[in-house]
Length: 308
Ligand code: NAI
Image (cartoon, rainbow, N blue to C red; front, side, top):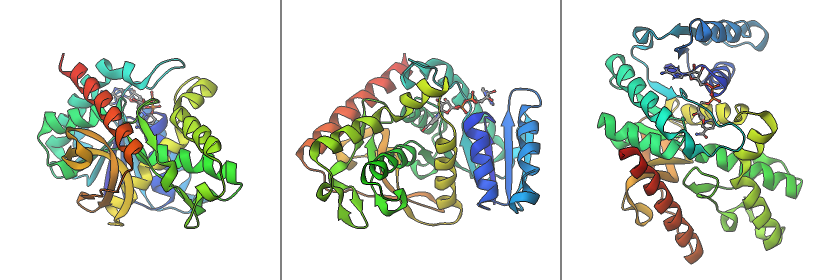
């Protein structure tokens, strides 16, 4: 199985690293526009193989799309990241041009690939990728919910003093500081609702920390985060390549689901060998429905900005 990652920067290279040491794919190609950069990242990762025991072949190329031919999955991490104080939305103009041109070039060599879009503002970039290519909706997946849900579970684990892996929780809606919706009501620890352990106020604080989770890290690091984003992309790629059919919140085209149309927004999806196998419609309560509708309005406005 072959994965191409376009953009060998912080998120792309971390994703390649996790895919390799977890043996998710047999071949990873990193591509970047910076001369020698992807080659260097690939060589550095390959030199981990003997000490971490993986067999994945990782290679790097500068702008040579022929080396990406016949990829099963293509991850788009090319584009500018946030700087402190910036919103994801401020990246729209520059990243829209990059995402569109990259996808067109990739498709020449990998017409059957499934795309995972990471570049921000991610919901809008995913929508752009879908509209610009006319690809079937199951083959264009935006990664945001996997990361936001992971952050949510981490904050819950810290509050509960329990392992994050024993906690189930999901973030749906847009992948923005004010648009994402951590579903506190449905979060659980070993199957028991976390509302049994945490007060409403504590849960609201955790939800608020989750929503600014990316901005908190951008403030601390001086640029946006990469370990959890890279691992989240690898988690999604694993579910596709190994047909795991995991339920993961992903930004996908909605056609009536959750009362919305003609946009990509985070909803629970079954992810398998065909990409999006199914959108799962969970029963939302009144306030969650209202939050989703508000989030969708913000995503729609962002998509409008794309057209101008
Ligand atoms: P980075 O700056 O470390 O890496 C981006 C790479 O893309 C650079 O190496 C650059 O040379 C390359 N690039 C730019 N234009 C290109 C082109 N036309 N073709 C090929 N490569 C090109 O940035 P980082 O931190 O890796 O972030 C990448 C993107 O992912 C950003 O837009 C960031 O906002 C987004 N992001 C999204 C997340 C999500 O949950 N969806 C989480 C974290 C980051």
